[in-house]
Amino acid sequence: MSRKELVDHYGLPKYVAPVMRRDVQQWIRKSQLITRLDFDVAQAAARSQMRKGS
Image (cartoon, rainbow, N blue to C red):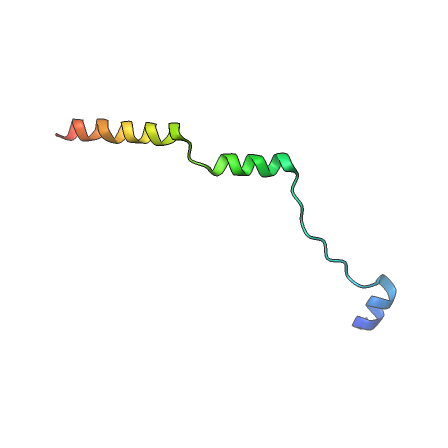
């Protein structure tokens, strides 16, 4: 089947941009951020390791 026959039979291809729901977008945004608590826990762990090594 040629391109012309395909277009004649099925029509031109339709391009659709993917769309995410708002709650999915918010979840992605929240899950990718490092919170202040994450930073504080990592700092406390590093400090305790430094004290043990001294």
